[in-house]
Image 1 (cartoon, rainbow, N blue to C red):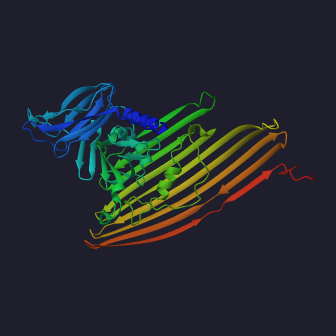
Image 2 (image 1 turned 180 degrees about the horizontal axis):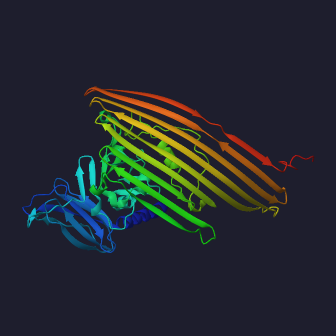
Image 3 (image 1 turned 60 degrees about the vertical axis):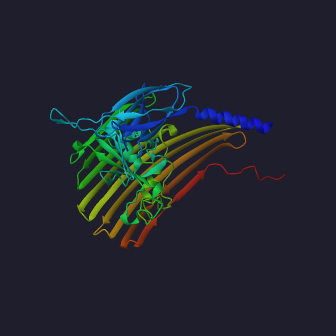
Length: 489
C-alpha cells in the first residue's frame, strides 16, 4: 500500500505539472494552399508584451507553440512578401491543446512608387539563426544583454553568460571580430542596445575552416552582432556617472563608466573603463579564467578549452554587499586590424586595481561550560592586475592557416589582516597576518593547419610558457598558542 500511494502521488504531481502548458499547433499556408516554410509565429503576452514562445515552420508549414494556461496572448504570423496576421487568443486554466491554421495573403511589393521593405523577426540559414533585434525590443533596453533577454531561445544570467537552447555561448563577436577575446560578460554589459541591428547565432561553430566538422562542434555556439548602419565607420559610446551616499551613511559613493567604440571594415577599437566604490567589480575570477584559458588549440571551437592552472589569481574579490568597502578601478582596450585579405591582427589590454576591506564579527557560546568567545577580524586587500594579449591569424590560401598568440600577465597582491579574540579560557588574543605575491607569466602559442586533400589534414602546435611567483606570508601572535593545554596531571 505504501508503494501504491507513492506512485499515485507522483502521477498526480506529474499531471499537474504538465497541465500548466498547452500546445498550440497548426499549418501556415499561402492563399493558394501552398505551405510556407520558415514562416515566423510569435506569441506575446497581451498584458506585458513579453515574448512567451515562438516557432518557425518546417517544410510542411507546420508550427508548434507551448503556452502557459490562464493567460491571453497575441499571435503574430509573418513571412517575407506576405501580409502579417495578428490574432489574440485566450488560454483558460482548463484549456486543451489548440489547433490553429493561418493563411497569409501576398503583399504588394510597391505602393505609390514606394518599395515596401519588411524584415522577418527570425531567419534560419543552415546552422545560423538571425534575429532582427528591433522586432523584439520593447524600447527600454540599455545594453546588449537586455536585447538578448528578449530573444526567444536565448538566456543571459547575472554574470553575463549567454545560453542558446541550453548551450553556453563560447564566443561573442561584433561585425565578425572578437570582442575582447570573445568574452560574453564584457559584451552583454557594455555594448549599447541602440547599436544592435542583428544577432546571429552560429551553431556548430569552429574558427578553423579545415577543422570544421571533425570535432564535437555540435555543442559549440558563437554569436555575432551586426551593427546598425549609423554605427559603422563612426565613433560612438556613452558615459555613465553617479554620486551619492552609500546605504544612507555619511560616506560618499561614486560611479564613472565611460565607453567608446569604433567599427569599420578594416579596424575596430573598443575602450571600456569603470571607476567606482559601490561594490561593483567589472573583472571577476570568471573573467580571469576566460581570458587566461583562451589560447587556441587543435580542438578550439570544438567544445574544448586549454586551461592554464596558475596560482596568480590573487585573493578573493567580493562584490556588492559581501564586503565592508570596495574601491575599483578598471581599464580595458581591444583592437582588431585587417591588414590584408590574408592577415588579421588583434589584441587587448586590461588594467585592474581592486581595494577591498572585510570586517567579520562572530560570537561563539559553549553550551557545556557557558563560556563565550567573541572574535573580530578585519582584512585589507589590494589586487593589481595587468594583462596584454596579441593575436595574429594568417591565411595565405584555403589550405593553410597559421595562428599565433602571446599573453603576458603581471599582478601584485597584498593582504593585511588582524584578528582579535576574547574568551574566559584563552583571554585576549591578537593575530596579525601579512600576505604578498607578485606573479608574472608570458605564454606564447602557435598553431598551424594544412589541408592536403579531402581526407588528410595536418596540424601542429608549439607553446612556450615562462612564469614566476614570489609568495610571502607572515603571522604574528601576541599570545603563546596552546597555553595551559600541556600541563601536568
